[in-house]
Image (cartoon, rainbow, N blue to C red):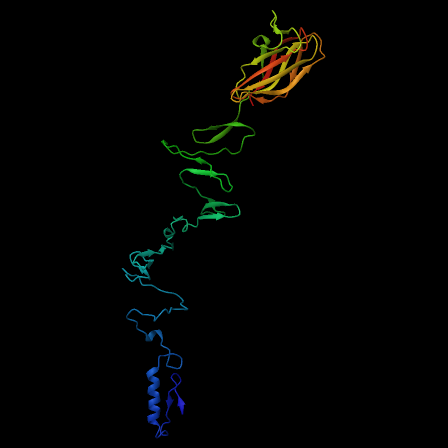
Length: 349
């Protein structure tokens, strides 16, 4: 006897299976009763043979596998929780949550980026880029353009600039004034100046750099008459020089007229020596700290004769400080040592 190809039903031999029909019929009916179109239990059902006219339930937790694609028919409304569907109002893909809330998944030709609560907008559809570069530890914002992409403009409120290091709390904040009546742009200069310069801005908002005007060296001459005795026996003569009556007499001359920020380049002392060692110095009195600090170096003369001499402390290069007083002093070496005054050379650094 032979069997059928799909359900393996025993086929009786025509005209030759006398006395076995009842057994064969029972076996055939038993097989038909349990057939489910699985392998060996009937022909596989083709799509043309299926007419699903109600929701199709998958028993238990089974899932469809090996799907090539899923095609949706847009729905005017859909109320089944935990469902993925396309809404006909906008033809966008939605997920309906367990709580019955429709969550929009797509937006036009892109994902609905408003879901992430971060950076969103049309940069994804225009191929612009916002990303972090770990190598340079910086964020980049680029607009779409011919390769390479252009840098994009950034609109923001206050801009805080921190030192590029860990644990920094203090920052420099760039901000727009609260009373801004009209917007404007500032364009930086094409290059840094060669040295210290002032910054100027044109009516078009273009910054330019002008070198700081320096007045060159200037000389301030101060007579000993403006000074006074600081130690020992010394006084003024009829000609206006400070004359010592003995050695170790000290005469101090205040330096007035050099503005704060100017630079003392050098100081020259004018004098005659009668004997001993003469000493010349420049001092500054720091008023807030109540301290006396010498500026430059100590100059001495133990060899010149009785003619008027000039002794210079060059290369001082000291910038005049605020709340500081400056004076020069002369210490005699012997009786009749004369101090005429000083010449101070200064400029604007």
